Image 1 (tube, one colour):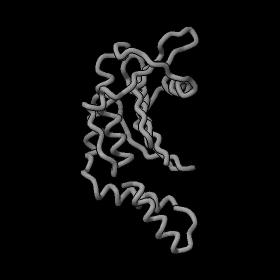
Image 2 (image 1 turned 90 degrees about the vertical axis):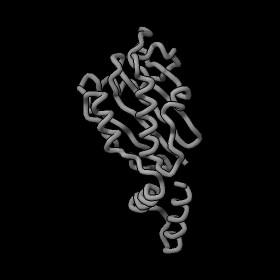
Image 3 (image 1 turned 120 degrees about the vertical axis):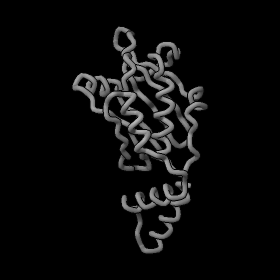
Amino acid sequence: MRHVVSALLLLTLAGCGHAALPAASLEAGRAVALAETPALDLTAALARFTKQEKRKVTATHLQPTDGKGGATLSVPLSAKDKTMLVQLYRLNPLPVEPDQFPAGVLERAADQIAVLHHFELPGDEALDAAAMRTKLRPRGYFDGDQKLMAVEAFMKNGTYQLAAKYDLKGRLLQVDMITWQ
């Protein structure tokens, strides 16, 4: 659906002599897709996540560039947690056993990933959090001494990938979604 709306906008703009899609057109396409799909009560989902995480959880669309877009679920982080999150983006996660995750984190990750997916791609078929739990790949981030420092629930599809990062206490660091065409 997203591709249909984008293609129609591109054809419309091309007929008007425009060569590229401005950001306003992308947002207009997103609004059309939102109007045609079942509503996600994002406010209720964010309130539920805020209660679970005991910190305010927000959802943000990333500005599309070079055919890539995305969205994040994020929480306010301490300076120490921000430093760790930056370090995680510099490391390659490795597969780990699900029992290395803090209790309940994979279930929360599936729920948060499903909501972020619907937030970013409202025209796509909604992900079922319960069914998706078995599709998530548990991964871990290790320090230089091979000690586990954080965990991640990861999922990849042909046009997007999702990664939910948590510390070893089970606290959310960030959920990222990257989309491409």
